[in-house]
Length: 124
Image 1 (cartoon, rainbow, N blue to C red):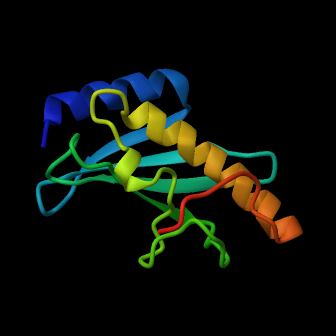
Image 2: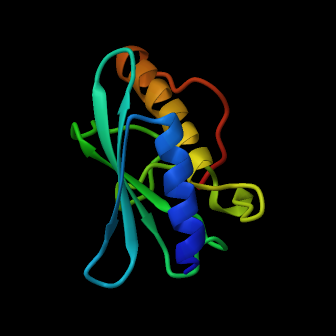
C-alpha cells in the first residue's frame, strides 16, 4: 500500500469536498470517511484501500442512509462506481472515486423514483 500517495489523495480531496476524514484501520490499512450531499440527502461513505492499492481500486460502501435494493452493487453491498477491469492506477485516484460515487448516488436516486437506472452498464 502506498501510504504517501493515499495521504496526498486525501489532502487533495479535502480541497474539493467539505467532509473527508482519513483513518487507520485495526488491520493497518486506511479507510476514508466522506459525506456527499445530493439534491435529496446527505450520504456518509467509507472508502477502503486494499493492500495492493493503487493497483487495485478501493472499495466504497454507503454507511448512511441504508440503501434500498438497486443495480450496480456487488454482492457484499459495495457500490460499483467503476467496473474493476477499467481501474487505471496511473489515472484514477481518490478524487476520481468520490466523483464517480457522487454520480452513482445521483443515478441511485433516479432509480428509486423511476425503477430505471439511467445510463449504460457492464454486467458483473
